[in-house]
Image 1 (cartoon, rainbow, N blue to C red):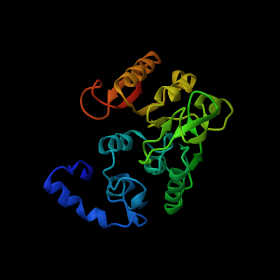
Image 2: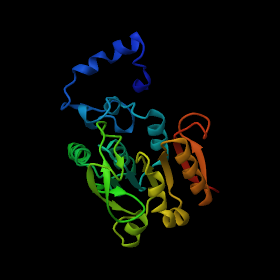
Image 3: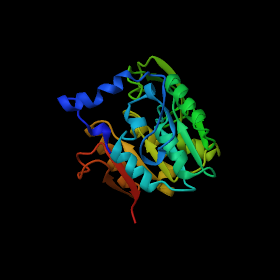
Image 4: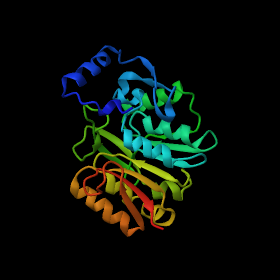
Length: 247
């Protein structure tokens, strides 16, 4: 059931959500639905939808259908680790997940979630993914999931390029990549152009703004990708894009 789809603008919706206010932020909850059912989650680390099992319901469902045993997954913009943990379960103990996250507060929860669930197949890379390796500024938001690279940011972070990491053997070539980087999408894609053109991993891409969505779509189509909306029926209206190798 998509609990996250219950509107908080109606009286009934507010009534159903009321008990969530009384759950202590530090409480460890069992995840109730999906492939992560039974795994442990810290209630206050993110949206209650994470432990309710309804977080990003359509995207999570697509992710669960496509990622399989033995796959290599990158989680770019891992935040506190929902998709990292999900990918870890889906690929199995003998494969690998690489989680990229630059924000110290998010990294703290990410690593706690991995420890709580005794996850041994995840490599955490404490950096923002961009079009080059180096350093940049990052703007932290009061919402932990909405930080982004910005020249006037309040946090200095390390940046990495996927093509450079792959060329030096620091990471394995991925089968699937989840990207949610709050406006840095083109920097991530540009820094992975060689790998994307040669290997065509499946992309679960969150875009932020119409112009940026169009740029990303043109770039990926030029590399031989077929694009589909993850949410809704229209690619033009969907911020969440599934990019597959064009056959």
